[in-house]
Image (cartoon, rainbow, N blue to C red; front, side, top):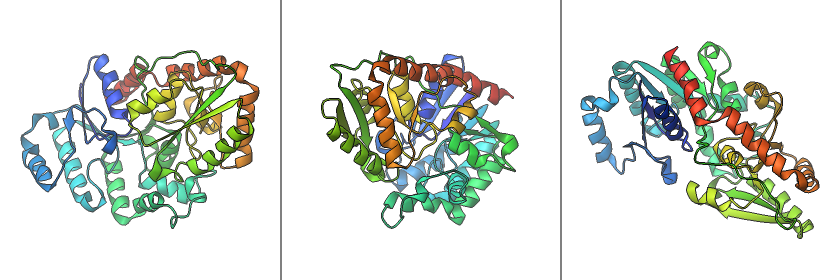
Amino acid sequence: MRILLIGEYSNVHWTLAEGLNKIGHQAVVASGGDGWKNYSRHIDFNFKNRLDVYKFLATLPFNNKFKGNDVVQFINFRFLFEEKQDYLNKLLFNFFKKYNNKTFLGAFGDDYFWVKSCIDKQFKYTQFDFIDKKDDKHLSQVLQLLSASSKELNTFIANQSNRIIAGLYEYYMAYHHQPYQNKLSFIPFPINTDKFKYSENKVSNGLIKIFIGIQENRIKWKGIDVLLKVLRDFAQKYPSDIELVEVSNVPFEKYTALYESCNVLVDQLYSYSPAINALTAMAKGKIILGGGESEMYQLYQEKENFPVLNVIPDENQISAQLEYLLANKSNFEEMGYNSASFVGKHHNYIDVAKQYEKLYLS
Protein backbone atom coordinates (compact mmCIF):
# COMPACT_ATOMS: atom_id res chain seq x y z
CA MET A 1 0.00 0.00 0.00
CA ARG A 2 0.91 3.64 -0.44
CA ILE A 3 0.46 5.26 2.97
CA LEU A 4 0.75 8.96 3.79
CA LEU A 5 1.11 9.87 7.47
CA ILE A 6 0.46 13.56 8.10
CA GLY A 7 1.66 15.33 11.25
CA GLU A 8 3.86 14.19 14.10
CA TYR A 9 3.78 13.70 17.87
CA SER A 10 6.75 12.20 19.70
CA ASN A 11 8.03 10.31 16.63
CA VAL A 12 4.91 8.11 16.50
CA HIS A 13 4.32 8.46 12.75
CA TRP A 14 8.01 8.09 11.88
CA THR A 15 8.31 4.89 13.90
CA LEU A 16 5.07 3.57 12.41
CA ALA A 17 6.43 4.33 8.93
CA GLU A 18 9.60 2.40 9.76
CA GLY A 19 7.49 -0.62 10.69
CA LEU A 20 5.17 -0.34 7.68
CA ASN A 21 8.10 -0.03 5.29
CA LYS A 22 9.75 -3.07 6.89
CA ILE A 23 6.70 -5.21 6.06
CA GLY A 24 6.58 -4.11 2.44
CA HIS A 25 4.51 -0.93 2.22
CA GLN A 26 5.44 2.56 1.03
CA ALA A 27 4.89 4.80 4.04
CA VAL A 28 5.77 8.49 3.88
CA VAL A 29 5.69 10.99 6.76
CA ALA A 30 4.80 14.62 6.04
CA SER A 31 5.18 16.87 9.08
CA GLY A 32 6.74 19.95 10.59
CA GLY A 33 8.86 17.78 12.90
CA ASP A 34 6.73 18.38 16.03
CA GLY A 35 8.11 21.84 16.66
CA TRP A 36 11.50 22.26 18.36
CA LYS A 37 11.83 18.47 18.68
CA ASN A 38 12.50 18.39 14.92
CA TYR A 39 11.67 14.72 14.36
CA SER A 40 12.54 13.06 11.06
CA ARG A 41 10.16 13.29 8.12
CA HIS A 42 10.19 12.59 4.39
CA ILE A 43 8.22 15.73 3.44
CA ASP A 44 8.85 18.93 5.39
CA PHE A 45 5.80 20.92 6.47
CA ASN A 46 7.80 23.35 8.60
CA PHE A 47 6.54 26.52 6.95
CA LYS A 48 8.60 29.56 7.92
CA ASN A 49 6.21 32.25 6.65
CA ARG A 50 2.97 32.86 4.76
CA LEU A 51 4.75 32.66 1.43
CA ASP A 52 5.76 29.06 2.18
CA VAL A 53 2.13 28.26 2.98
CA TYR A 54 0.88 29.86 -0.25
CA LYS A 55 3.46 27.94 -2.29
CA PHE A 56 2.41 24.68 -0.64
CA LEU A 57 -1.29 25.29 -1.30
CA ALA A 58 -0.65 26.38 -4.89
CA THR A 59 1.35 23.26 -5.76
CA LEU A 60 -0.75 20.80 -3.73
CA PRO A 61 -3.09 19.74 -6.61
CA PHE A 62 -0.10 18.94 -8.82
CA ASN A 63 1.92 16.92 -6.30
CA ASN A 64 1.37 13.21 -6.90
CA LYS A 65 2.70 12.36 -3.44
CA PHE A 66 -0.54 13.76 -2.01
CA LYS A 67 -2.87 11.95 -4.41
CA GLY A 68 -3.67 8.31 -5.12
CA ASN A 69 -2.61 6.95 -1.72
CA ASP A 70 -4.37 3.92 -0.30
CA VAL A 71 -4.30 5.47 3.17
CA VAL A 72 -3.94 8.99 4.54
CA GLN A 73 -3.65 9.19 8.33
CA PHE A 74 -3.78 12.39 10.37
CA ILE A 75 -1.96 12.70 13.70
CA ASN A 76 -4.72 14.94 15.09
CA PHE A 77 -7.78 16.85 13.91
CA ARG A 78 -5.60 19.98 13.90
CA PHE A 79 -2.86 18.25 11.97
CA LEU A 80 -1.04 21.14 10.32
CA PHE A 81 -2.27 24.64 11.17
CA GLU A 82 -3.21 26.33 14.44
CA GLU A 83 -6.75 27.22 15.52
CA LYS A 84 -6.92 30.56 13.69
CA GLN A 85 -6.34 28.68 10.42
CA ASP A 86 -8.73 25.79 11.00
CA TYR A 87 -10.35 26.56 7.67
CA LEU A 88 -7.07 25.45 6.06
CA ASN A 89 -7.07 22.17 8.03
CA LYS A 90 -10.61 21.52 6.82
CA LEU A 91 -9.73 22.45 3.24
CA LEU A 92 -6.73 20.12 3.29
CA PHE A 93 -8.68 17.26 4.86
CA ASN A 94 -11.32 17.54 2.14
CA PHE A 95 -8.59 17.50 -0.51
CA PHE A 96 -6.90 14.41 0.92
CA LYS A 97 -10.23 12.62 1.34
CA LYS A 98 -11.24 13.39 -2.25
CA TYR A 99 -7.99 12.38 -3.94
CA ASN A 100 -7.03 9.36 -1.83
CA ASN A 101 -8.74 6.11 -0.90
CA LYS A 102 -9.16 5.96 2.90
CA THR A 103 -8.67 8.50 5.67
CA PHE A 104 -7.85 7.72 9.32
CA LEU A 105 -7.89 10.07 12.29
CA GLY A 106 -5.33 9.53 15.02
CA ALA A 107 -6.34 10.06 18.65
CA PHE A 108 -2.71 10.48 19.70
CA GLY A 109 -2.78 13.76 21.60
CA ASP A 110 -4.91 16.49 23.10
CA ASP A 111 -8.09 17.23 21.19
CA TYR A 112 -11.64 18.46 21.80
CA PHE A 113 -13.05 15.06 22.79
CA TRP A 114 -10.27 14.32 25.29
CA VAL A 115 -10.54 17.70 27.00
CA LYS A 116 -14.33 17.38 27.16
CA SER A 117 -14.07 13.90 28.68
CA CYS A 118 -11.77 15.33 31.37
CA ILE A 119 -14.02 18.29 32.11
CA ASP A 120 -17.03 15.92 32.26
CA LYS A 121 -15.24 13.85 34.96
CA GLN A 122 -15.04 10.72 32.83
CA PHE A 123 -11.75 9.81 34.60
CA LYS A 124 -10.97 9.33 38.29
CA TYR A 125 -8.55 12.27 38.16
CA THR A 126 -6.92 14.52 35.56
CA GLN A 127 -4.75 17.63 35.44
CA PHE A 128 -7.91 19.71 35.32
CA ASP A 129 -8.76 18.72 38.90
CA PHE A 130 -5.51 20.11 40.33
CA ILE A 131 -4.29 22.99 38.18
CA ASP A 132 -5.65 26.53 38.16
CA LYS A 133 -5.67 27.94 34.64
CA LYS A 134 -4.74 31.35 36.07
CA ASP A 135 -1.41 29.87 37.20
CA ASP A 136 -0.63 27.71 34.18
CA LYS A 137 -0.30 29.04 30.65
CA HIS A 138 -0.32 25.61 29.07
CA LEU A 139 -3.63 24.71 30.72
CA SER A 140 -5.16 27.87 29.30
CA GLN A 141 -3.96 26.83 25.84
CA VAL A 142 -5.39 23.32 26.22
CA LEU A 143 -8.76 24.70 27.30
CA GLN A 144 -8.95 26.45 23.93
CA LEU A 145 -9.65 22.98 22.53
CA LEU A 146 -13.20 23.41 23.89
CA SER A 147 -13.82 26.30 21.50
CA ALA A 148 -16.58 26.17 18.89
CA SER A 149 -13.94 26.03 16.15
CA SER A 150 -12.22 23.02 17.76
CA LYS A 151 -15.48 21.19 18.34
CA GLU A 152 -16.65 21.78 14.78
CA LEU A 153 -13.43 20.68 13.09
CA ASN A 154 -12.76 17.70 15.39
CA THR A 155 -16.34 16.47 14.96
CA PHE A 156 -16.24 16.96 11.19
CA ILE A 157 -12.98 15.03 10.69
CA ALA A 158 -14.04 12.28 13.13
CA ASN A 159 -17.32 11.85 11.23
CA GLN A 160 -15.68 11.90 7.81
CA SER A 161 -12.75 9.57 8.58
CA ASN A 162 -13.04 5.87 7.85
CA ARG A 163 -11.70 4.97 11.28
CA ILE A 164 -10.37 6.58 14.46
CA ILE A 165 -7.24 5.04 15.99
CA ALA A 166 -6.33 5.71 19.62
CA GLY A 167 -2.79 5.16 20.91
CA LEU A 168 -3.39 5.49 24.67
CA TYR A 169 -6.10 4.46 27.11
CA GLU A 170 -7.01 8.09 27.82
CA TYR A 171 -7.62 8.94 24.17
CA TYR A 172 -9.45 5.69 23.54
CA MET A 173 -11.94 6.42 26.32
CA ALA A 174 -12.48 9.95 25.00
CA TYR A 175 -13.98 8.47 21.82
CA HIS A 176 -15.52 5.36 23.39
CA HIS A 177 -19.11 6.50 22.96
CA GLN A 178 -21.64 6.88 20.21
CA PRO A 179 -21.39 7.74 17.39
CA TYR A 180 -17.69 6.77 17.36
CA GLN A 181 -17.65 3.51 19.29
CA ASN A 182 -18.10 1.37 16.18
CA LYS A 183 -15.35 3.11 14.21
CA LEU A 184 -12.81 3.28 17.03
CA SER A 185 -9.76 1.04 17.35
CA PHE A 186 -7.00 0.88 19.95
CA ILE A 187 -3.51 0.20 18.62
CA PRO A 188 -0.57 0.78 21.01
CA PHE A 189 2.13 3.29 20.09
CA PRO A 190 5.02 1.76 18.11
CA ILE A 191 8.51 1.58 19.63
CA ASN A 192 11.54 0.73 17.50
CA THR A 193 12.91 -2.08 19.65
CA ASP A 194 15.74 -2.58 17.16
CA LYS A 195 17.01 0.89 18.07
CA PHE A 196 16.16 1.03 21.78
CA LYS A 197 17.71 -2.17 23.06
CA TYR A 198 17.33 -3.79 26.45
CA SER A 199 20.17 -3.90 28.96
CA GLU A 200 20.13 -5.23 32.52
CA ASN A 201 19.03 -2.80 35.19
CA LYS A 202 21.86 -2.95 37.70
CA VAL A 203 22.24 -0.91 40.87
CA SER A 204 25.87 0.20 41.19
CA ASN A 205 27.34 0.49 44.69
CA GLY A 206 23.85 0.35 46.20
CA LEU A 207 22.97 3.76 44.72
CA ILE A 208 19.61 4.05 42.91
CA LYS A 209 19.78 6.64 40.13
CA ILE A 210 16.39 8.27 39.49
CA PHE A 211 15.99 10.37 36.35
CA ILE A 212 13.38 13.06 35.76
CA GLY A 213 13.05 15.16 32.61
CA ILE A 214 11.60 18.64 32.89
CA GLN A 215 9.81 20.67 30.22
CA GLU A 216 9.81 24.16 31.68
CA ASN A 217 6.54 25.16 30.04
CA ARG A 218 4.71 22.01 31.21
CA ILE A 219 5.92 21.52 34.77
CA LYS A 220 2.48 21.72 36.35
CA TRP A 221 0.71 20.15 33.39
CA LYS A 222 2.67 16.92 33.77
CA GLY A 223 2.70 17.09 37.56
CA ILE A 224 6.46 17.56 37.64
CA ASP A 225 6.14 20.22 40.35
CA VAL A 226 4.56 17.68 42.72
CA LEU A 227 6.89 14.86 41.72
CA LEU A 228 10.01 16.99 42.08
CA LYS A 229 9.06 18.06 45.59
CA VAL A 230 8.61 14.46 46.76
CA LEU A 231 11.72 13.24 44.90
CA ARG A 232 13.97 15.95 46.33
CA ASP A 233 12.74 15.27 49.85
CA PHE A 234 13.30 11.55 49.34
CA ALA A 235 16.82 12.03 47.96
CA GLN A 236 17.66 14.28 50.89
CA LYS A 237 16.30 11.69 53.32
CA TYR A 238 18.39 8.88 51.79
CA PRO A 239 21.55 10.55 50.40
CA SER A 240 23.55 7.30 50.46
CA ASP A 241 20.87 5.37 48.56
CA ILE A 242 19.38 7.83 46.07
CA GLU A 243 20.88 9.99 43.33
CA LEU A 244 18.38 12.29 41.63
CA VAL A 245 19.22 13.33 38.07
CA GLU A 246 17.27 16.35 36.79
CA VAL A 247 17.42 17.38 33.12
CA SER A 248 15.60 20.32 31.52
CA ASN A 249 14.55 21.01 27.91
CA VAL A 250 16.84 18.76 25.87
CA PRO A 251 16.15 17.17 22.45
CA PHE A 252 14.88 13.58 22.40
CA GLU A 253 18.11 11.93 21.23
CA LYS A 254 20.17 13.64 23.94
CA TYR A 255 17.44 12.95 26.49
CA THR A 256 17.50 9.18 25.91
CA ALA A 257 21.30 9.16 26.16
CA LEU A 258 21.25 11.04 29.46
CA TYR A 259 19.11 8.46 31.28
CA GLU A 260 21.17 5.53 29.98
CA SER A 261 22.96 4.97 33.30
CA CYS A 262 19.87 5.50 35.45
CA ASN A 263 17.69 2.82 37.03
CA VAL A 264 14.36 4.61 37.29
CA LEU A 265 12.70 7.12 34.97
CA VAL A 266 9.99 9.35 36.39
CA ASP A 267 7.23 10.03 33.89
CA GLN A 268 3.95 11.92 34.31
CA LEU A 269 1.75 12.21 37.39
CA TYR A 270 -1.73 12.51 35.89
CA SER A 271 -1.48 9.89 33.13
CA TYR A 272 -3.13 6.48 33.18
CA SER A 273 -0.64 4.83 30.86
CA PRO A 274 2.97 5.23 29.68
CA ALA A 275 3.45 7.23 26.49
CA ILE A 276 6.46 7.38 24.14
CA ASN A 277 8.90 8.85 26.67
CA ALA A 278 8.24 6.10 29.21
CA LEU A 279 7.84 3.30 26.66
CA THR A 280 11.22 4.06 25.10
CA ALA A 281 12.87 3.87 28.52
CA MET A 282 11.00 0.64 29.31
CA ALA A 283 12.33 -0.92 26.11
CA LYS A 284 15.82 -0.22 27.48
CA GLY A 285 15.01 -1.95 30.76
CA LYS A 286 14.28 1.07 32.92
CA ILE A 287 11.73 1.05 35.73
CA ILE A 288 8.98 3.62 35.25
CA LEU A 289 7.46 5.67 38.03
CA GLY A 290 4.40 7.16 36.36
CA GLY A 291 0.97 6.33 34.98
CA GLY A 292 0.05 2.66 35.02
CA GLU A 293 -3.58 2.32 36.12
CA SER A 294 -5.42 -1.03 36.06
CA GLU A 295 -7.83 0.27 33.39
CA MET A 296 -4.89 0.61 31.00
CA TYR A 297 -3.81 -3.02 31.45
CA GLN A 298 -7.40 -4.15 30.86
CA LEU A 299 -7.43 -2.36 27.50
CA TYR A 300 -4.18 -4.11 26.59
CA GLN A 301 -5.74 -7.40 27.76
CA GLU A 302 -2.62 -7.86 29.86
CA LYS A 303 -3.18 -10.24 32.79
CA GLU A 304 0.32 -11.10 33.99
CA ASN A 305 2.88 -8.33 33.59
CA PHE A 306 2.19 -4.94 35.24
CA PRO A 307 5.60 -3.23 35.17
CA VAL A 308 4.80 0.46 35.69
CA LEU A 309 5.07 1.66 39.27
CA ASN A 310 1.85 3.66 39.29
CA VAL A 311 1.61 7.06 40.97
CA ILE A 312 -1.44 9.19 41.66
CA PRO A 313 -1.81 12.86 42.70
CA ASP A 314 -1.08 12.13 46.37
CA GLU A 315 2.32 12.94 47.88
CA ASN A 316 2.02 10.17 50.47
CA GLN A 317 1.30 7.58 47.76
CA ILE A 318 4.29 8.78 45.69
CA SER A 319 6.52 8.56 48.76
CA ALA A 320 5.27 5.04 49.43
CA GLN A 321 6.19 3.98 45.89
CA LEU A 322 9.68 5.41 46.37
CA GLU A 323 10.03 3.48 49.63
CA TYR A 324 8.99 0.37 47.71
CA LEU A 325 11.78 0.99 45.20
CA LEU A 326 14.30 1.41 47.98
CA ALA A 327 13.22 -1.83 49.64
CA ASN A 328 13.37 -3.75 46.35
CA LYS A 329 16.63 -2.59 44.79
CA SER A 330 17.75 -6.24 44.68
CA ASN A 331 14.85 -6.91 42.26
CA PHE A 332 15.71 -4.17 39.77
CA GLU A 333 17.02 -6.56 37.11
CA GLU A 334 13.74 -8.49 37.14
CA MET A 335 11.69 -5.29 37.22
CA GLY A 336 13.64 -3.83 34.30
CA TYR A 337 13.24 -7.05 32.35
CA ASN A 338 9.48 -6.90 32.92
CA SER A 339 9.46 -3.35 31.52
CA ALA A 340 11.23 -4.45 28.35
CA SER A 341 9.04 -7.56 28.02
CA PHE A 342 5.88 -5.43 28.17
CA VAL A 343 7.11 -3.17 25.38
CA GLY A 344 8.27 -6.16 23.33
CA LYS A 345 4.87 -7.78 23.65
CA HIS A 346 2.62 -4.78 23.04
CA HIS A 347 4.67 -2.05 21.30
CA ASN A 348 7.19 -3.69 18.96
CA TYR A 349 7.02 -1.48 15.88
CA ILE A 350 6.80 -4.40 13.44
CA ASP A 351 3.91 -6.00 15.31
CA VAL A 352 2.17 -2.64 15.66
CA ALA A 353 2.61 -2.00 11.93
CA LYS A 354 0.91 -5.33 11.22
CA GLN A 355 -2.03 -4.25 13.36
CA TYR A 356 -2.29 -1.07 11.29
CA GLU A 357 -1.97 -3.09 8.10
CA LYS A 358 -4.88 -5.31 9.15
CA LEU A 359 -7.02 -2.27 9.98
CA TYR A 360 -6.13 -0.43 6.77
CA LEU A 361 -7.13 -3.45 4.70
CA SER A 362 -10.35 -4.17 6.57
